[in-house]
Amino acid sequence: MICERRGVTSLAKAGPGSGPIAYDWLRRAIDHYESADEVGPEGNEEALLRWNTCSRVIMRNHHVRPLPEEPEHTMLE
Image (cartoon, rainbow, N blue to C red; front, side, top):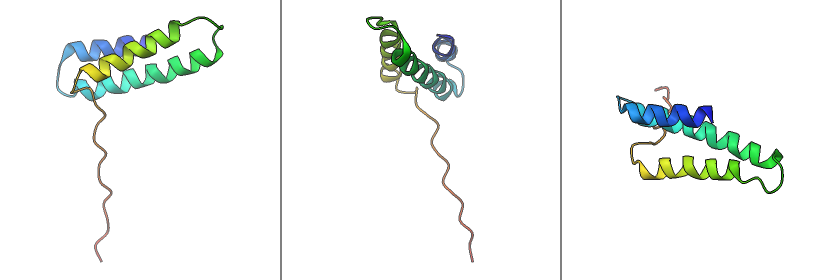
């Protein structure tokens, strides 16, 4: 939940680069919730509900995206 809260807080600040920062935190939270769902007690839906919340935040905010990958530099001969 800490990663989720950090993501939402980063998003709320709306400063430069806040979208990719929020995305990174929310993706970390999603990964943790997936792990928790696998080992948690049967019938406990908390991890799944939190996972859905993070996913919805990412889907609803067009600027919450990962940083574009930098192209690899090639050596000129």
